[in-house]
Image (cartoon, rainbow, N blue to C red; front, side):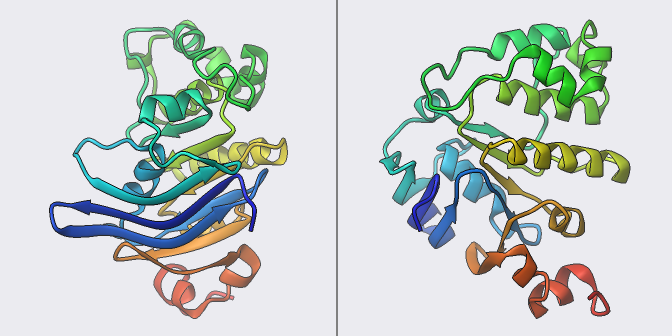
Length: 243
């Protein structure tokens, strides 16, 4: 498959322990691919490795290409500048800046990356709540509002590949549905997204391609229509009676 993102023989190790071992993962342009798995399966480790970002110092090997270009030895900062933009778990925003100052701070960081920086008007259309709160500082926002702002800041960085790590964690079901629907809207508009998500039921409603990660290894992957009926997913995430 020729895709926006191609991973081959990726290994992420801490000391002698291999945390993630992925032979192949691909994301085609203009699609939403989701990686699911239990806590500790290695989902965050995988998506952080794609961005070359980590709080620790893992050893990485393998090949990561974006639009056919080898990113394997590209630094985290340069990956972001070249359009591989990560929104890590934790809703990172500038707490002392207003919503609008946060959004203005992100623009232009990935100029020439091959993506496009979303204009403020587009951001406010996608996230009307941010427009209402545009003069409030990050510290005054709710968890859901901070997550919206974190994604909006990433959109201002001209992503050609947007990486989202557990964006729904800690949010009320209504906000989860709203956030994932907005991500789907972005994908329908041409953005390519790789999502790590633990809320499998919600993710199935918006995803094109689903990957199942267990103990650091991808054990299944395919279209959401096919994966929805995979007995491993039904048993572990949807309940035995789910159709």
